[in-house]
Length: 213
Length: 368
Image (cartoon, rainbow over all chains, first blue to last red; front, side, top):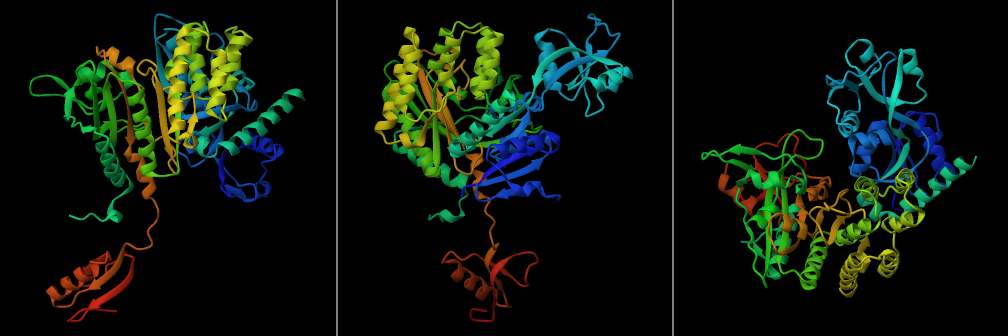
């Protein structure tokens, strides 16, 4: 039987995503076993799941190591992988936002210093506003950049806003809502279309059920 | 000279097969000069797969580019000749910056271009050659087709603002129907207009289903005309027996500033990206000041290297340990090699070389 390779993001979001696959009838019981394995197969259903770093899911799918996968909209907007975005799973919901110190006032006579992991998203957002910015690319602990005077604002994912408030920051503007998306490799979408469409339909059913609950 | 096909890699085999195929249909080879004026590419950067170009100043102070694209060079060197069609194929290396990479890559590319008074005849022939090109690489292929003019006409009919059209197009390209719903509510697009846009997201069981769905939503003269062109291409595909290998896919738009008619892309089982891409690009011809129409496609041969990845069990069939008689050893190796056995002559067993058999030469011939 032809296998469908599915890349799932490691962590809490990945577990929720797997629950949806399972509830839709695309299960792989071995994934529930307590071990450190990263690849799990259900030969009867022709499914092979594997856990990868959330930011790498899109790369696995784009390069064809996985036929489909689940990635956050933030990753899709930042890296613009050449994949199909088939379904909004409506989980892992948060937003990409601009945040700043509570007393921040935008001084428009100087370029705005923006600290972020998401350089492309920030650049596009401010380009639309015709606002000159100075991007400071950081890989983590973005929240401390304005506190230490490294940047004027940050562009980052905001879920509850608790981390921001605890660091004396507040969201200023929402750039885009974020959620988990089912993505597909373009060649796989053609060669394994029937199975991928079945999985998409099954997951779409789960999304509807969750909305109705 | 005889060439053993086994020694050719997948991309080399394809290059020979495709060159032979295009010559059989009367296409002449186009040899691109290594360096061309940078301004040609700078003016049409959007058309290029990657917009980074290797450039340098030549001895006359002109800014030159190292082969970023073949199609632009062919158009630049073509002349309008009413009533004629120029048919050219090429087999060239181009230099591009792959997405996410920091250094340029040499990419082997072959393809063909048809420039002049293009009619349904040339469109049909190019579709046939695209199918045959894919088939010659692997019988397990899929050919996707869409029509950029039809997509453009229907978007124009939708009376969406330019920015809304851009957003909708991005949803079509990524098959993102959820985002389309969001944009429709954000832009206050009516349910009827939303349903019209739905035709671009559907998977069609047959060409007839697709044509029937599109004919229900085409109202402007332009859209009806474009659908007629698309239908003609689909009828041709059916008549040629290619329907089973063809999928209608409107997420395939190429660049709408340049393409005008059918657009297509080909996939081979085992390669995760499209290896053939092309279409009718009359808009590009217009932008370059030409009255002629044009259609063509490129085959990305470098992608075929993935097909050579099967692990070989042995590096060489035979390791032949030579004695003192050099002539005897070389003759024995030559004799063994005549039946396509690979032989490595050496005086001692080499480290790290895997072989099926080790033979040693003791005077008259090879012995186990």
